[in-house]
Image (cartoon, rainbow, N blue to C red; front, side, top):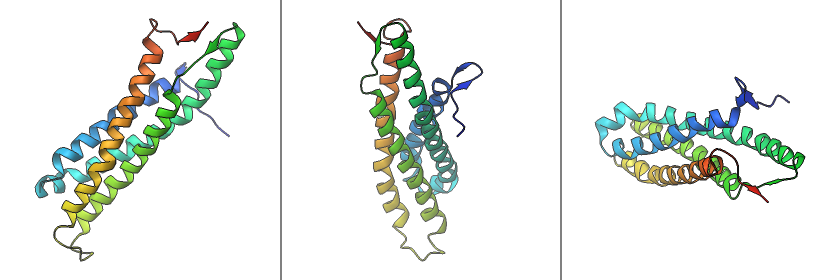
Length: 167
């Protein structure tokens, strides 16, 4: 199986994770800001859904590239007699990935309900109800992505650009 570990000589995780950390919160905030007004929903719900799905895909790629990076760093640490610790970041990344995927799905459902409400004979209030429901995974995706991103940044930059190493 092909496993992406490096891009242009840099760890793939470090590059791919930035797309998820930008797209997911941006989509969540955009949905919250535009979903309550019909004209804004019509104009922005599709691009927001695309952004949320792309954020979920990048969260998946970040998760898939983070696990091999974690293994490589542990092996490198063992080679010099050190134990590399990652704290809660791997679990936080898994949680952020889960909620990014749920949010991507819900953003598409929100767009579809608003776009096809009349064709599907849904009540006039259904887009507002869908908006209210979509805000929950949007908020969870936003918060979990911030938490995971912060813990990852802290891991990398706490000791002047080195990972925390147990002594």
